[in-house]
Length: 272
Image (cartoon, rainbow, N blue to C red):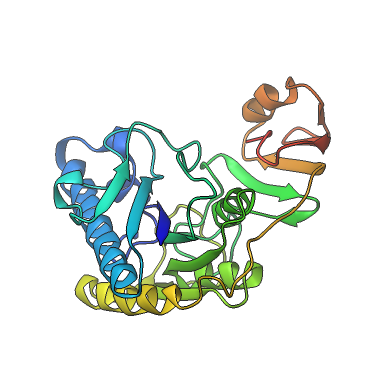
């Protein structure tokens, strides 16, 4: 039984500072050690997921590093020997995912932009203040579930902060979640550093392992997430210059300085 794992960095236990722990283009000088630490923590969480999935019945595990271009958010030297890693695919989507997989797992995910009481919440990239498909606000969790659903693959597991877990449950009520941290600030903090409480990394890995093992029992019981085209899209940016770039795409229409819409889109990511 093959499973596909989408990995990210912002939802990992112990990761709370985007600039020092998640921004690979800034990972130099004294910043570098914290980025490398975050990548190590993310890889060990993935390994715990792999171990749980294998013990739950998985026969093959393929993971995609969804945290940008090389070096990304995972350390290949620390990778579980039973896990295959999609490399060189950037962060544009889960390359290699198809209908041969029995389930999608999401590891280290974060909530969408604008989410209250969330750790490092954003949608796709930092300049997007909000993204809507058919009037529904969406983020990376939605897009991963949707992409897997195109191949009939259900999402059965997610690890991340509590806000990410709640977002996943709103889409897939029976999904298995592993909560590894929680924001303490009630309002939305975006990519700013906000007070949060995190499990110790070793404890987080235990939670992920147990949850991933339980998730394997849900394969075949949870339906894939599907939303048929056409789509009405809307994106709101934090700065007008980004709306300028998107407004020139075919079918796009500027509605105000920061916002662009598109009617009848065949794909939901056309304004990202």
